[in-house]
Image: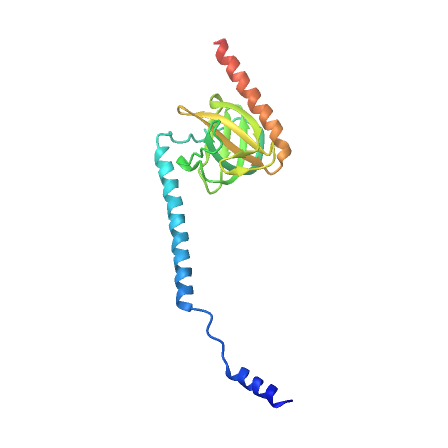
Length: 193
Protein backbone atom coordinates (compact mmCIF):
# COMPACT_ATOMS: atom_id res chain seq x y z
CA UNK A 1 0.00 0.00 0.00
CA UNK A 2 1.08 3.48 -0.64
CA UNK A 3 1.80 5.86 2.20
CA UNK A 4 -1.11 8.12 1.14
CA UNK A 5 -3.63 5.27 1.42
CA UNK A 6 -2.23 4.27 4.82
CA UNK A 7 -2.49 7.84 6.01
CA UNK A 8 -6.13 8.15 4.79
CA UNK A 9 -7.02 4.89 6.52
CA UNK A 10 -5.44 6.10 9.77
CA UNK A 11 -7.31 9.42 9.58
CA UNK A 12 -10.60 7.63 8.90
CA UNK A 13 -10.05 5.37 11.90
CA UNK A 14 -9.33 8.36 14.13
CA UNK A 15 -12.42 10.32 13.03
CA UNK A 16 -15.67 9.59 14.78
CA UNK A 17 -19.03 10.62 13.47
CA UNK A 18 -21.09 13.03 15.46
CA UNK A 19 -23.92 11.59 17.54
CA UNK A 20 -27.03 11.53 15.42
CA UNK A 21 -29.62 10.71 18.05
CA UNK A 22 -30.70 13.35 20.52
CA UNK A 23 -32.20 11.04 23.15
CA UNK A 24 -33.76 13.81 25.21
CA UNK A 25 -35.78 15.15 22.28
CA UNK A 26 -36.74 11.65 21.12
CA UNK A 27 -38.02 10.66 24.58
CA UNK A 28 -39.94 13.94 24.86
CA UNK A 29 -41.66 13.28 21.50
CA UNK A 30 -42.60 9.71 22.49
CA UNK A 31 -43.99 10.85 25.85
CA UNK A 32 -45.89 13.67 24.13
CA UNK A 33 -47.38 11.24 21.62
CA UNK A 34 -48.46 8.84 24.38
CA UNK A 35 -50.09 11.69 26.32
CA UNK A 36 -51.91 12.80 23.16
CA UNK A 37 -53.21 9.26 22.48
CA UNK A 38 -54.39 8.93 26.10
CA UNK A 39 -56.15 12.31 25.80
CA UNK A 40 -57.95 11.22 22.60
CA UNK A 41 -59.12 7.99 24.27
CA UNK A 42 -60.33 9.98 27.27
CA UNK A 43 -62.30 12.29 24.96
CA UNK A 44 -63.86 9.27 23.21
CA UNK A 45 -64.90 7.81 26.57
CA UNK A 46 -66.40 11.13 27.66
CA UNK A 47 -68.36 11.29 24.40
CA UNK A 48 -69.69 7.77 24.97
CA UNK A 49 -70.76 8.69 28.54
CA UNK A 50 -72.33 11.93 27.30
CA UNK A 51 -74.32 10.03 24.65
CA UNK A 52 -75.52 7.60 27.35
CA UNK A 53 -76.64 10.52 29.54
CA UNK A 54 -78.59 12.03 26.62
CA UNK A 55 -80.35 8.69 26.08
CA UNK A 56 -81.10 8.09 29.77
CA UNK A 57 -84.81 8.70 29.16
CA UNK A 58 -84.97 5.35 27.34
CA UNK A 59 -86.89 2.90 29.59
CA UNK A 60 -85.22 -0.20 31.04
CA UNK A 61 -85.01 -3.12 28.64
CA UNK A 62 -87.64 -5.80 29.23
CA UNK A 63 -86.48 -9.24 30.37
CA UNK A 64 -87.75 -12.44 28.80
CA UNK A 65 -90.84 -13.82 30.56
CA UNK A 66 -90.68 -17.24 32.18
CA UNK A 67 -91.98 -20.14 30.12
CA UNK A 68 -91.50 -18.84 26.58
CA UNK A 69 -93.46 -20.78 23.95
CA UNK A 70 -91.61 -23.07 21.57
CA UNK A 71 -89.28 -21.17 19.28
CA UNK A 72 -89.96 -20.54 15.62
CA UNK A 73 -86.36 -19.68 14.75
CA UNK A 74 -83.03 -19.58 16.56
CA UNK A 75 -79.61 -18.35 15.56
CA UNK A 76 -76.20 -17.66 17.01
CA UNK A 77 -73.99 -14.89 15.74
CA UNK A 78 -72.97 -11.32 16.56
CA UNK A 79 -74.93 -8.37 17.86
CA UNK A 80 -73.55 -5.24 16.19
CA UNK A 81 -75.50 -2.56 18.02
CA UNK A 82 -78.70 -0.57 18.00
CA UNK A 83 -79.51 2.78 16.44
CA UNK A 84 -82.45 5.11 16.13
CA UNK A 85 -84.64 3.60 13.40
CA UNK A 86 -83.73 4.89 9.95
CA UNK A 87 -80.53 6.58 11.15
CA UNK A 88 -77.85 3.92 10.84
CA UNK A 89 -75.11 6.05 12.44
CA UNK A 90 -77.07 7.28 15.50
CA UNK A 91 -75.89 4.59 17.92
CA UNK A 92 -77.89 4.00 21.09
CA UNK A 93 -75.57 3.34 24.04
CA UNK A 94 -78.06 3.48 26.94
CA UNK A 95 -78.66 0.21 28.85
CA UNK A 96 -75.77 -1.51 27.07
CA UNK A 97 -77.40 -1.42 23.61
CA UNK A 98 -74.20 0.00 22.12
CA UNK A 99 -72.00 -2.91 23.24
CA UNK A 100 -71.10 -5.40 20.51
CA UNK A 101 -71.19 -9.02 21.58
CA UNK A 102 -71.97 -12.59 20.69
CA UNK A 103 -75.71 -13.25 20.56
CA UNK A 104 -78.25 -16.04 20.70
CA UNK A 105 -81.53 -14.94 19.10
CA UNK A 106 -84.75 -16.85 19.61
CA UNK A 107 -88.01 -15.91 17.88
CA UNK A 108 -91.17 -17.21 19.56
CA UNK A 109 -94.85 -16.31 19.32
CA UNK A 110 -94.26 -14.13 22.40
CA UNK A 111 -91.46 -12.10 20.79
CA UNK A 112 -87.72 -11.92 20.20
CA UNK A 113 -85.38 -13.08 22.97
CA UNK A 114 -81.88 -11.58 22.70
CA UNK A 115 -79.31 -13.34 24.91
CA UNK A 116 -75.87 -11.69 24.91
CA UNK A 117 -73.14 -13.35 26.98
CA UNK A 118 -71.16 -10.64 28.76
CA UNK A 119 -73.71 -7.92 27.94
CA UNK A 120 -77.30 -7.00 28.83
CA UNK A 121 -79.93 -9.46 27.60
CA UNK A 122 -83.30 -8.14 26.49
CA UNK A 123 -86.65 -9.25 25.14
CA UNK A 124 -88.76 -7.60 22.45
CA UNK A 125 -92.45 -8.50 22.85
CA UNK A 126 -94.15 -9.53 19.60
CA UNK A 127 -96.44 -6.49 19.78
CA UNK A 128 -93.37 -4.22 19.74
CA UNK A 129 -91.76 -5.77 16.64
CA UNK A 130 -92.16 -3.46 13.64
CA UNK A 131 -90.31 -5.40 10.95
CA UNK A 132 -87.04 -6.78 9.70
CA UNK A 133 -84.85 -6.26 6.67
CA UNK A 134 -81.47 -7.14 5.25
CA UNK A 135 -79.02 -4.27 5.20
CA UNK A 136 -75.32 -3.62 4.81
CA UNK A 137 -74.47 -1.50 7.82
CA UNK A 138 -75.35 -0.22 11.26
CA UNK A 139 -73.54 2.03 13.75
CA UNK A 140 -70.07 1.93 12.29
CA UNK A 141 -70.19 -1.68 11.07
CA UNK A 142 -70.44 -2.13 7.30
CA UNK A 143 -70.74 -5.54 5.69
CA UNK A 144 -71.61 -6.81 2.24
CA UNK A 145 -75.04 -5.98 0.85
CA UNK A 146 -77.61 -8.03 2.76
CA UNK A 147 -75.03 -9.23 5.28
CA UNK A 148 -76.83 -7.79 8.30
CA UNK A 149 -80.22 -8.69 9.78
CA UNK A 150 -81.81 -5.46 11.04
CA UNK A 151 -84.83 -5.79 13.32
CA UNK A 152 -86.95 -2.67 13.93
CA UNK A 153 -88.82 -2.53 17.24
CA UNK A 154 -90.54 -0.01 19.49
CA UNK A 155 -89.27 0.73 22.97
CA UNK A 156 -91.06 3.43 24.88
CA UNK A 157 -91.74 6.19 22.37
CA UNK A 158 -88.68 5.38 20.28
CA UNK A 159 -88.25 3.12 17.24
CA UNK A 160 -84.99 1.19 17.36
CA UNK A 161 -83.05 -0.74 14.71
CA UNK A 162 -80.89 -3.57 16.09
CA UNK A 163 -78.30 -5.24 13.86
CA UNK A 164 -77.43 -8.94 13.99
CA UNK A 165 -75.21 -11.16 11.87
CA UNK A 166 -75.74 -14.89 11.98
CA UNK A 167 -72.85 -17.32 11.89
CA UNK A 168 -74.71 -18.72 8.87
CA UNK A 169 -75.79 -15.70 6.83
CA UNK A 170 -78.13 -17.82 4.69
CA UNK A 171 -80.52 -17.82 7.70
CA UNK A 172 -81.16 -14.08 7.43
CA UNK A 173 -83.87 -14.32 4.75
CA UNK A 174 -85.94 -16.74 6.85
CA UNK A 175 -85.72 -14.36 9.80
CA UNK A 176 -86.85 -11.38 7.73
CA UNK A 177 -89.81 -13.34 6.41
CA UNK A 178 -90.82 -14.72 9.83
CA UNK A 179 -90.62 -11.38 11.64
CA UNK A 180 -92.46 -9.51 8.88
CA UNK A 181 -95.21 -12.18 8.79
CA UNK A 182 -95.49 -12.02 12.58
CA UNK A 183 -95.72 -8.23 12.44
CA UNK A 184 -98.32 -8.40 9.67
CA UNK A 185 -100.53 -10.84 11.60
CA UNK A 186 -100.30 -8.72 14.78
CA UNK A 187 -101.21 -5.59 12.80
CA UNK A 188 -104.15 -7.40 11.16
CA UNK A 189 -105.40 -8.71 14.52
CA UNK A 190 -105.21 -5.21 16.01
CA UNK A 191 -107.17 -3.74 13.08
CA UNK A 192 -109.95 -6.33 13.45
CA UNK A 193 -110.59 -5.41 17.09
